[in-house]
Image (cartoon, rainbow, N blue to C red):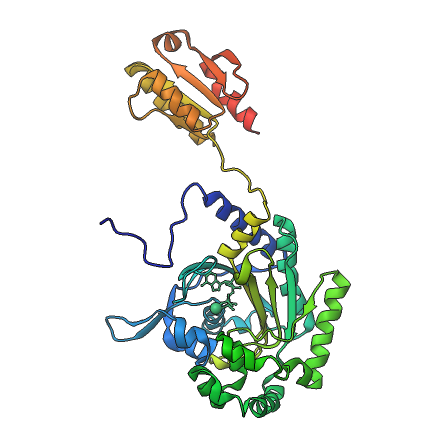
Amino acid sequence: MAIQTPKGTRDILPNEIHKWNYVEKEFAIICKRFGYQEIRIPVFEYTELFQRGVGDDTDIVQKEMYTFNDKGGRSITLRPEGTAGVVRSYIQNGMSSLPQPVKLFYQITAYRYEQVQQGRYREFHQFGAELLGAQDAAADVEIISILALFFEKIGVKNLILNLNSIGCPECRKAYNELLKEYLSDKISDMCDTCKTRYDRNPMRILDCKVDSCRAHLINAPALLDHICDDCRAHFEQVTHKLETIGIPYNIDRNIVRGLDYYTKTVFEFVSENIGTKGTVCGGGRYDGLVEEIGGQPTPGVGFALGVERLLLEMESQGIEFPEADAPDIYIGAIGERAGQVAEKLTWQLRSKNIYCIKDIMGRSVKAQMKYADKLNVRYTLILGDNEIDSNKARLKDMKTGETKDISLDTLIDRLVKNKA
Ligand code: ATP
Ligand code: MG
C-alpha cells in the first residue's frame, strides 16, 4: 500500500494554499502595525524547556508531547506551543537589554499527541504574539486588540471574548487551599490525574476533561472571587480599557487555560459555529515564565491562535478568500522556430513580472488551448511561422472572447501596462 501521512497530520494542497497565504499575510500586517517583529524558533527544543515552561502537571506535558532521545541521548521535544520557545529566545539572545517592551509575533507548526477530530490534529498551525517587559493592563489590552482587529480585517464575526483572571502565585496559594477543602470529600471519586494534582497543583484539576470529574467541579469556588487587591485592580483596568476601545467581552470564571505559566489575565476567543472545538485562540499574562525558564523576572502577555480552527470558522461563516492568481498570458507555439521565439518571449515577460505560461509538452495547438483554458488564463497568443515572419500575432482575451492583431514588439509593454 502507498505510504500515507501519519495520523493527525495533513498536507495543505495547492488548491487551498491561497487561504493560508491570505491569513498569514493579513496576520503579519496587523502585527507589524502594532510594532511586533517576526521571530522564528526551532521546531524542537530540549524537553526541559516545556517541562519548566508549560508546566510538569499540565495535560500538554503529561500526555501530549512528542518526546524522544536523539542519537546523542538528549531528550528532545517537538514544540507543543510557541511561547516557551519565544521566551527561551528572549533570554538566550539578551533581549532584556533591548528597549522594552519587546514585541514578537510568530507563525508556527505545533505538535501534540491528541485524539484526532475536526479542529484537533497532531500537527497544527498557530499564529501568536508575545509582549515582554510590560506589566500594565494596557499590554493585555494591546494583545487582545491585535486579535480583535485581525478578526475584523478578515471579516470574522461573532467570536466571543471570554475573560478571566487567575491571579498571581500569592492569591493562588490561598485559593488552592480553598479548592482542596472543597474537593476533600470528592477527590476519592475523581480520576488518577486529579488525585495527583490535588497535592501537587490543585488548580490544574479545574482543567480536567473527564465528565465525572467535571461534575464534581460545578460548585467549586471561582478563583476570580478570591484574587488579591492588586490582581483585582489589574483586572478592572483590563475590562475598563476594553470598554474604552469598544471590544465586547464576557467574564468567564471557568477559564483556567491548559498551561501553568499564566497569571492574572487569561482569555479565549470562542466560536459558536465550530462545535466543541470552538476555541479559536487563547492567551493571557505570564509574569512568572521568564524567571521560570532562567531569566530575570520579566512580565509578559501573549496569545496563540489555531489556524486550522480559524479557517474552519471562516468557512462556516461563508467568508470569501481572495482567489489565487491566474496566469496573465499563455503563449502557444507551433513548430520549432515559433517555439524558440516563445521561449525568449516568455523569459522576457516573466522578467517583467508577468505571470506567463508556455507549452513545454510539445502539444498540438488545440491541446495547448484546452490546457490554457483550464488554467483560467487572461490572454492567449499563438505563434507560428506566419506570426514570426510578419512580427504580428493574435491576442485573445479569454474573458471577453475578443481578439486583436498586435505587433510582437508591443506585447510586453501592453501586458505590463495592463497589469499596472
Ligand atoms: P483545547 O482546549 O481545544 O485543547 P488548548 O487550550 O489546548 O485548546 P492552547 O494551548 O491555548 O489550546 O492553543 C491555542 C490554540 O491552538 C487553541 O485555541 C486552538 O485553536 C489551537 N489548538 C490547540 N490544540 C490544537 C490541536 N491539537 N489541533 C488544532 N488546533 C489546536
Ligand atoms: Mg488542548
